[in-house]
Length: 289
Image 1 (cartoon, one colour):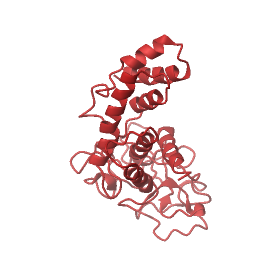
Image 2 (cartoon, one colour):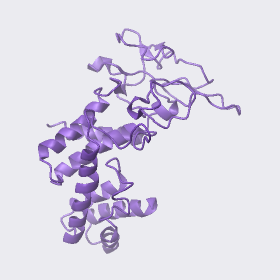
Image 3 (cartoon, helix red, strand yellow):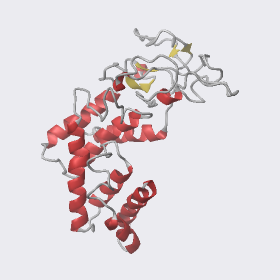
Image 4 (spheres, rainbow, N blue to C red):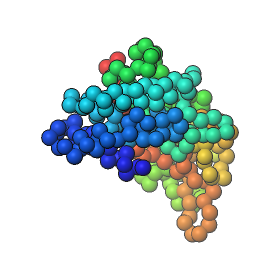
């Protein structure tokens, strides 16, 4: 299924750029857009990126067939816009709850940003699912505000933002450059892991054991993984029962000597370009608003 979806998204992009490549058009038109490749009404959520990318390329293609465009617009209105409004709450809202984390899994920052970005793409193409444009934009903006601190933990899900006016930002990410990742239970990288000297953050440490300080702190603006309802480590996190609370700003490594790793902090704070990219995409929609 994943290969089929990737092929369809790539084909839609190729067809948009060069209408003479008939094989790309055939693949894109032959994809099951109307059922969102069998996931509509079930597994599909507004955090989806691969099929969505194909949909956006197709809707931007001046030569897309009317039937393909119609099927895509109908599915987008249901899966992307309708799905987001079904889960809408004061902090944006994503699929999942106390009994099932769903989108609140490993890398939920990616999901949070994709919800907002997909809503803004829907606005761009005028697919509003019966809502006013302002309503869709406002919901997308809630997902952006979640990332920037309007969430149950008041956490700014970017690193080291005090110099740029950000409060309660992350000072620990599980990363080879910006954290100490040796023995389980060890903390501290004198240069990059922890609150930088000279930075006033009244609520730091956010958790009693995560009180390391450093010369510089991590590079600013890195997106950590985010709340992970399925965190498998043995360390305490604020709330394992409520998905949006399942986050701890910490970076603890492991000795890979055959012993189990108790912290598994990478499941929560490890950054990835697959989290960073969707966040940048979401922010880009609001740069001129």
